Image 1 (cartoon, rainbow, N blue to C red):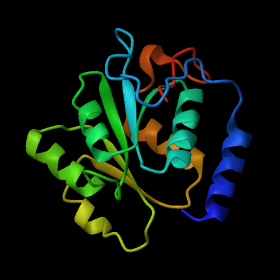
Image 2: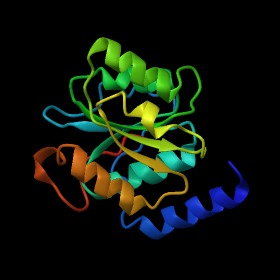
Image 3: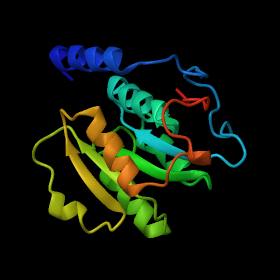
Length: 172
């Protein structure tokens, strides 16, 4: 990603942070069993850490428990968990691409609502429509509030009906 896009994302992130993250987990820590009993989570899968952190922070401030994934393989592990209720997915990622992850989900009957974020202009929305769980498409750059509106539209509300800031951890 170019430096101007990174600078824009850093600026947006700084402007949207209203409170610190309740719990910060270090890269490499086992995050597979960290959500608390009864909580549900949304997986944010993007190999671009700035985008993942921006989207995760916006969702966290809205009360969602967020599990970031930086590879398709990591996202695949998380979406199979029973507490996962949705996926925000970049199409181009290492190990397993977003398109391959959608195919795996379809073959295994994983019917989570998916919001796709594409960083390249030539992706085929019609091709993605073959996956009924893909509910929204976004091109980069996008506005964080548009992602939040889409999440509120197609995914369950945060655990416990929380809206606004949260005491729940943002798992990144």
